[in-house]
Image 1: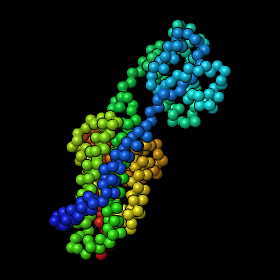
Image 2: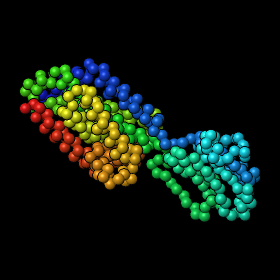
Image 3: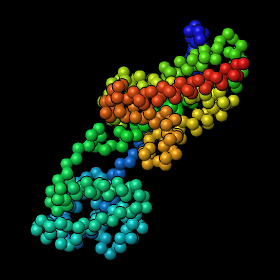
Image 4: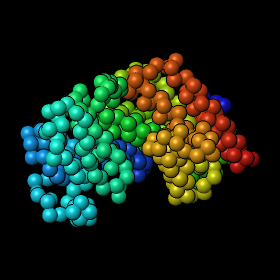
Length: 365
């Protein structure tokens, strides 16, 4: 490897980037749009749930319970009278998502400090929403009547790292991991494929450069651009979605650099396989987007996957970076606490770069 030749190839790649508006759009505009769209779309919080109440007690105690539900942002108590409408019809006509039934002896049992049974009916056609609504109902009742008839044990819970249980705290770090690996692999896979289509790759191959000179020269400019993207996405996530950053910027920079190098090496390997830019883009999206979303723990917990899929996740770079970025942003983890995930990223990066350089060397020969 020659530093001067690597600098020359890197400078040539910078000129390509500056003169190609499509590349600039992919680098700067596409990540922001993805973060904003996904950040708002991927929201597990449910608000303003339509709650129908069958008040058989008509007492001050029942009115107090109804008021407790109506005073939160999570429920919207429907004012209509459902005395002549069956429960099934309420759900069939989508008049409500939940029905709260208060017994006629509610006030009497509360006055005698006895246990009271309150029935909650849920529309479970959407199972995930039904579970969330059930948890909300239990939380409202427990917060108001925790030490009366609803429980005999005083359990005091303290939620760490995400006390308000905001889904943005979970999804935004995952979006940073997904966007970075997708953009980095997309850019580098296109860079060599573009030269194949334009016929300029032959000019590079006949010049006195090695395969590693070409690969490093093409990767270095994208490393700088990807790090810029990472800090822009991080800033937008903190400003727009109010996600905290409890860790150290240096730790974030070091591990993000390692992750970016891994993603860029993956894009280089794809570029040695694809003959056209369109094929490179499709391969980059297939190799990065689906595994990152499905097999990294971004949406679905890895421990709940089948054993075979759990083993496959060990070769997905985003699995390790998700542990890193969530640890840095939410827990304030240090370099020493995240070294195992960093080592795994380094091994994956070295293997992918070795494979890409060997395939490119064969093409040169």
